[in-house]
Length: 161
Image 1: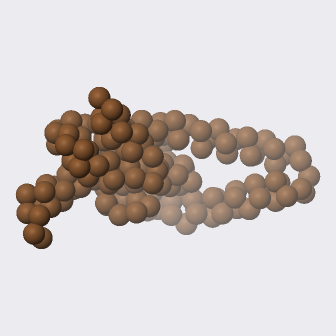
Image 2 (image 1 turned 135 degrees about the horizontal axis):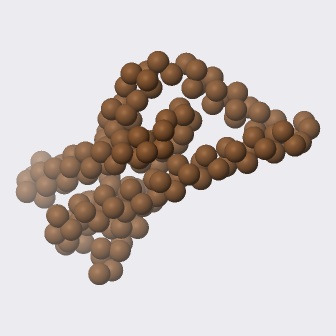
């Protein structure tokens, strides 16, 4: 049981996600199916919460920006909003055209900084609908888990690669 919990926690962390959790599960001797399911669930658990908290934090920043004058927190919040609005305006045509699929593909790439945590931040900054973003990220996490599982399977089956 502790092995599954270890995989679950590793998958939920932004540093490892499914890319680290699946090889860890295999190294711990867990079955590939149990590792896959545990890693996907662990990786997806933070996503709805992240999307909600990012929206909440942005609302809090906006309220604080309206209430305060020109202090450092206000300048930082102002800089964030300028950057976020600029990014949203520049990429809006691409988000409208490729949004859900693009986010899923971005999440699926098994490279650093392309997992569920980064995709949640990107979806929020780009102003994507939370439900659409969650579904897209879920599809991307499943695809990433399939890719990583396949690569780990190749290494385990053919250790001489």
